[in-house]
Length: 270
Image 1 (cartoon, rainbow, N blue to C red):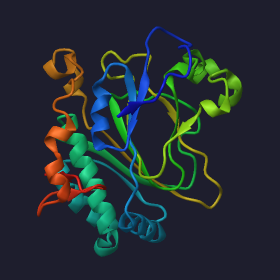
Image 2 (tube, rainbow, N blue to C red; image 1 turned 90 degrees about the vertical axis):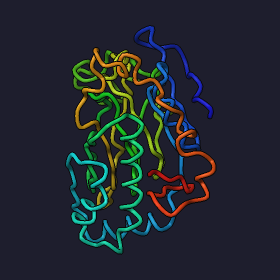
Image 3 (cartoon, rainbow, N blue to C red; image 1 turned 180 degrees about the horizontal axis):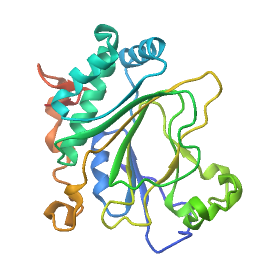
């Protein structure tokens, strides 16, 4: 695992944050590090998932799924919502695997899931999320844009922009400060509600979309934030790295088994 290098001096405060980016699934556990506010698992989606995504968008270009659910119910909920079991199977399996992983990593019994087809830019301005942590992955279309912590003048967020566009407000200095995820990348975006991460939530925005194009976005959120209250043992240590993911889904399981959800690379979640 390699962390993205610092790009300059922090413009707003003494907190330092960096990105953890790797092609290995284990990198997502780095979100527990105090100095990390985005962890990205870079992956290539298998053709079966890409094909399923295209079929879903063709049949349901206005798809909007938004609900809180038990991870055990993910597959059934998605199949019922999509109404095309065979065609969407690979996409459903991938989403269900990410839900299992997210809930395990953060010790959650329920998750807030949104699977949305977008024909417009949902959040065009750079912003931070008032959540502990959000998973985001794009299955089709342009993916999320974000700014390294030390490239942001946080005083220019929201009202501080004085109504000026992001590119003119002084929020960042150069257009090449803007980073962008790729299709299939799984990102954990640490928000302002993560204890100790106040004023250091990842600054990000939705990508621009050309007229007539679509984007399929999955986001996962905590269905509640009790795990991060100040009197909770795990939260007081930022739930610090329960177990490295590689110890939970070790190399021996990468060859596959007869049960569980399979994600890119053969990693199984039971």
